Length: 388
Image (cartoon, rainbow, N blue to C red; front, side, top):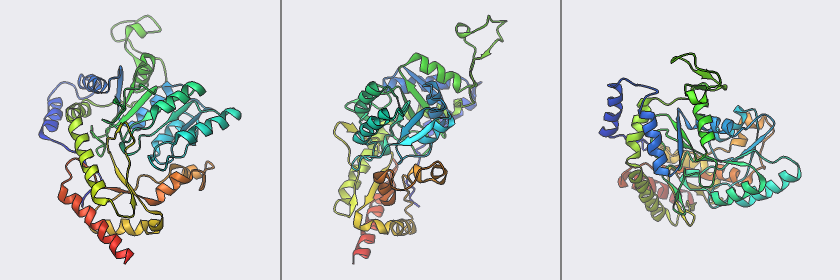
């Protein structure tokens, strides 16, 4: 079976983890700040806070931004549920902005229109979460301008986009956002097994997220509210969580990020080859916007309108040929949990159409051209059979 995504682990990665196992620290040790600094340096951002998942990073980012009950967070429907759930963890309300039919990222025009209406109704969001779908950078500068006009915070969900750039600016630099979140799940660009990170240029936001990831506790004498009773003294100053990353995970991440350019370049090579080989089939292929370098976490295609009714048939056919295609994503607002909260069909038609037509083809750095040829030839055979 050719998977849709797969981690790349080398002997150097294994040795990095083994070296931690042989050390005195398995967690809360020196590997974590080294990994954080390495990511911060690579992205050109001041602060990086490592946690046990991107979901945790989204949660503490929302809390650090002050999202509370009665306030609103907007994101896109074509994302993993965590991009929306983070609002509900804070007791806030969730809503969605439809996507652009070409980039499959948040539509800037629909966002602008929705903000006008929300201002009129006194229902403006506290936080906007644009998602860099499949590794393609969002038009962050346009969202940032709207943020200054309407007064909301921008939290980038860049779980797909480690190593991507927009106008030469690395995703994660927070040039056009308050906080950016990365994922290090095994199918992502680099992996720590499970893991995530929140990046920011704001010292206060960084401190709040550091506190929130570890029970809301500080041992920093300069941060104490009361006078220290001794070297054992610590203070819980807020309600936090145990969202810490281990040194084992950080060591793996530190080894992996050394090959970030290699991973992203290979993904782009495979994506370009797919686009050349699939040209002419009844598919909408991914488009990289001018000024963008995509990380190509995913290679997603859409069936042409007159073939959408074959969606299930394509999946079954490819999987029968040992090609483990996937779907990114079933629209969040159509999940049963969100239907119970008042969402349903017809609210975000572009994202809904995307969910009915999209197919995620296998793409990972160690994918061979023979494997890719098998995917392409199988698709060609499928379309010949159904057209004839």
